[in-house]
Image (spheres, rainbow, N blue to C red):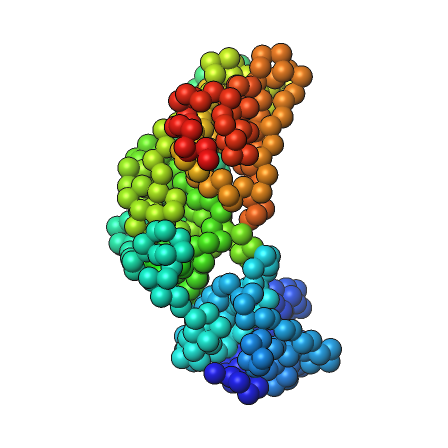
Length: 490
């Protein structure tokens, strides 16, 4: 396959031209709105179309790739020539993406990534589907299942799961896309309520007339705002359905393959050995119903956006272990978690309240000099107390054999992380002067995927036990409830 120099599909020229025109569409719209349809504007648009077409054809013609001497050679560039050599043994991931135009021509975008890379080493914008599959098979030969089972000690038969339409709808409804709309909605409500105030200088009858008009206006605005809010939320749900439609995950041998998208199809292949951790995130709208999203941290994988780390969009908490046993048995550990020391509770509450106090107290002068509704910001203080208590209640950690589990919460999302010991780049234990006074520490984990997790206000003894576990030495407290036994530490 491509042992002689190969070019991309001719559709690549069109795709390159479309990319240039797409990047120029906003300036063109601004010019058309400000200047109107004039002769020079039409001439400039025609020149841009010719330049984009010529650039697309030249970039397609000058782009070639070849497999030679067990290496992938890529030549690109119109005026400045660039030669990229990628040894076959370093190639870890070959992903396929397919946009609307690419689907019309039956081509895909191929992204080739290497071990330790932070972005794709090579991107082929238009390759025929069969050629892309042949290229992946040539550069990433599949390992027999029997050999993989012997090397990892874990049998990995092929497993596949496709998201249902009802799960996709729930995923869209419970996404955070509508939070901004809700905030804007309540902001408008407070603005309207501010108009209702007693004016002693007005006569009673006149005030009642104005009051009735304001109430009618508010009711109409409320109904209109609710309709608009529901419509925008519906658009957000439709967008998520289009983006993640037909979401499918497959485990075959030593790889996970994720495919999703109705209009633009994404196909992602992730080597299991590069997965550093799994995260189960429970958002504010999903946690009460027992739902969360399962994500992965992969070393050196060029995660352009959060969705590439998404392993499964919507999963019940009680089904997490079963899902991991099917697709990632290496991470299928049901580890009980202990809460933090009681003394840490007040510290969590204090930190949350301290962070919110400036914003809450800022409403006092606003209420005195401008708007009486400024006093509402004081409600942020009890909310901050509750937030700190909630973060304390959800925080915890535990060990089982060679797996560490950490759970923490930010303002809206609770996250549970499973990290194998051998995937930790470093573990740090530190304390502030205030923590030292009450024998508390903070531990942090660095992963090869450049992710960082920390847990604040763990007891000093537990921090020392965790460090001993990390170094593989005997625990200072052998019968510690979160470290099973001496064999687990070896």
